Figure 1 (cartoon, helix red, strand yellow):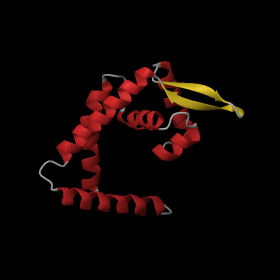
Figure 2 (cartoon, one colour):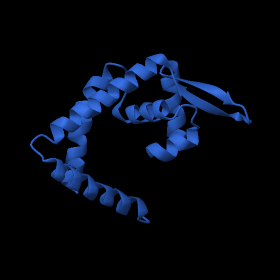
Figure 3 (cartoon, rainbow, N blue to C red):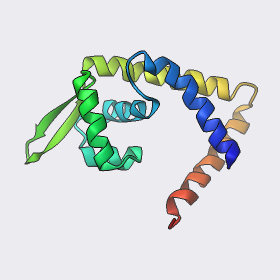
Figure 4 (cartoon, rainbow, N blue to C red):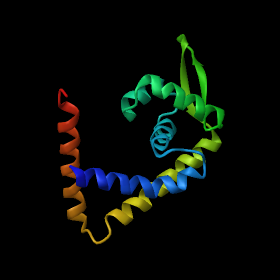
Length: 136
């Protein structure tokens, strides 16, 4: 598992270099991308899909809102909830993030055949499923 963790860190490092110029941490990229792909989502949806604690997410979203990356709008059916949208500024960064993730993937899979990449992804999905279903 150390190899998997090392690969994760190396991948994040490549992506993080580009994102730091926007004032984002690599974990924030995932949140911004999720909001961009799911306009009007709720905070609980982001927390669930990005594996972030709700209390942590609240602070992250506040910081992203202050930087002009997202905006919150009162949810029509519940005044206590907010729908979350990416701004034009945030959309540009989310799009750039997709490009950076693809660049990092291209670097990571250099020299791999399509079959090897597909097999690797299958194994990773199984590892993730196993880890998420554990009671630890």
